[in-house]
Length: 50
Image 1 (cartoon, rainbow, N blue to C red):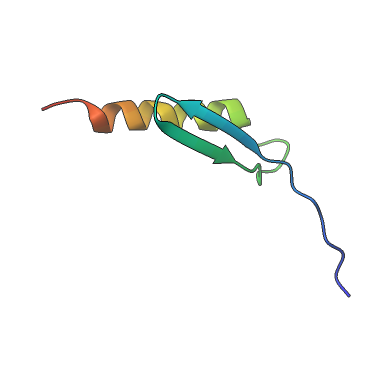
Image 2: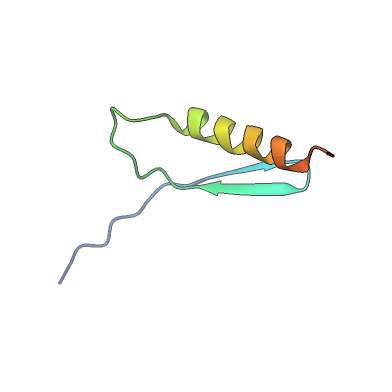
């Protein structure tokens, strides 16, 4: 039977947007902080009025 591995996850809330982040990258990849920053910046760009 396969072994169940508990994954850690982080929940962040920015204004009314809630992000649940579960790291799946290799240790040498981007940090959770860098990925979250990109998500937040993308959300800000989407919400800008034309």
